[in-house]
Length: 212
Image 1 (cartoon, rainbow, N blue to C red):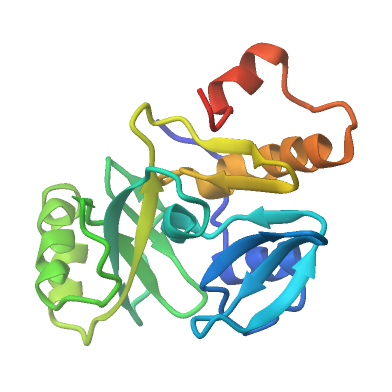
Image 2: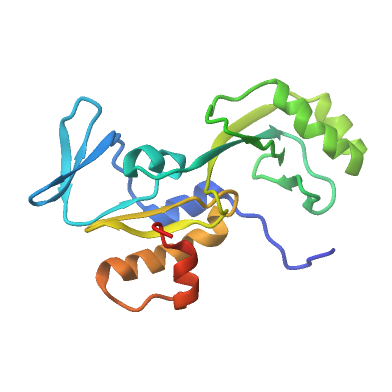
């Protein structure tokens, strides 16, 4: 399939445009208080109190919001080597970056370890060799970098997007479709919090209701 108008997204640029400035303090837990929700540090120190809290922390949402999520670890391979020809996808993918090429990705269920693993480069290059053997051979001779992360998935493979308690909302369980689903579902969750119409139909809302 040739998709002439397809583009490649730079995740860092997109995330920066979506969330703006970030407070680097880490929230370890949430507690219901008279004023709303207290955001607590690992030592129990209150970091902030808010009327409304949106938890969109990937697999970390399981611990923060008490949801049942399943981790699926993924790692990509990076190299400072130009990708000959267009981006390709075959279940895996090879795409250009600003500095080279990215090949991915592994898919390890029930693994929540985000640390890169040297052995996963071979797991990414082996399927590439069946599609683009010359590219795989070139990559095998290059210094390789890695990035790893943990996808958050649900039992029915549908996201959780909505309220789980008064003033507490979640957006998680996006699996490998975060950049596709997050913008629309974020509008839905914000609409719920503000009492305004959702962009989702009622049938769609039932599919992502956290209490389903």
